[in-house]
Length: 448
Image (cartoon, rainbow, N blue to C red; front, side):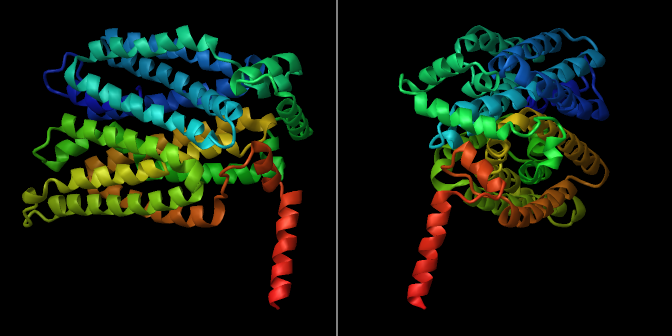
C-alpha cells in the first residue's frame, strides 16, 4: 500500500489549496523514499533471517508498517512525511526478503509458482486499495484505515508454522517434522524430512558467507539471472508509472477522471497478476516472460508516440484520441502482469541455495530499490524537462533489450524441486537426465 500511496496523495499535496504544500521535487522524493528505506530493510533481513527465522522476520515487518501509517496520518511537515515513508521502506525491504523465502520453502513444487507469485499479487492489491481509499478520503483517513493491515498481520501471522528449512538449518529436526506435518496435512513426512536434510546439508558444504554469492559458480549464475530479470522488471517503468498514475492520466486529457482511470489500471493489473499466478505452473516461467515483454514494449512505444504527437506536434489535434493513453496503459499492465509482475520475484525464491538465500534476497532487493529509485527519478526529470513521451520511449527500448536477455539467459524452473534447480545451476546431470540423453542417442542412432 505504501508504494501506491503517492498516486492519489501527491496531487492533493501539490494542489495550491493544500494545508501541507509539496513541491514537484519533494513529491518525487516522497514517491521514492520507501525504495531508499527498503535498502536498509534488506540489509537488516540479511542479518536476521537465518538467526530469528522467516516467520519472526515477517511478524517484525508489522512494526515499521504500522508506525509509518500513523506518522503519515498526523504529519504536519514534509520532513516527517519523508521519514514516515522511509520507515515504511524498511518494512518493505525486510518483507521482500522474508516473504519470498518463506513461501518458496513451505510450498510443494507443483504449486510453488502460484504460492510464490502471491508476493507480487499482494503488492498490486495494496496499490489498488490505497488508490481507492486515497481517491475518496483525506490523506489522514486513508493512512488510519491502512494501518489496520499491519495490525492484523501482527495479530494473526503468529499462528503460522515456521519454515522447515529454517529448523533443519538450526539442527532442530523435531520442530522441522512438526512444521512439515502442519504444512503437508499428514503425519507421513519422514521421507520429505530426510530429503530436505540431505539437500540442505549438501548446500551447506559451502561456507554460507556473503562472498559465496560471488565465489560459487551456481550462485553467480543465479545472481546474474535474478539481477537481470529484476532490472528488466524495473526498467520498463512499472513502479514509476504506478507512482505517477494520476499524473499520467491527467496529462492525457481524457474524459475519464484520473482517479477512475488509476483504479481501472490497478484493478486490471491485479486480475491479470492473479491469472498469471494460476497458469505459471502450467505454462512455465519463460513463455510468460517472453510474451509479457513483447506486449509491454509495444504498448509503451504507442503510449510514448501519442504523447510525442500531443507535445511536439501541436499542429496535430489528438484530442479526439485521448482514450489512447488509457487503452495503451491498460494494455501495458495486462502484458506486464502476465509475466514481468510475478516471475522475477518467483525466480528470486527459487534459484539460490539455502545457505546464501538470505544474502541473495537482500542484495537483489537493494539492487531492485536502487534501480526503481533511479527509474522513478528519471521519469520525473525527463517528464519535467523534455516531455512525458521520452521516458515511455526509453521504457520500450529496455523491453527490447530485456527480451534478448530472457531468451538466452533465463532457465525454466517449472515443476522442479529447489534441490533439482540447484543441481542444474551447478551443471550436474541427474540419473533421469542421463537416461533421457541415452534414449535420445538411441533414437538418433536408429534413424541413422
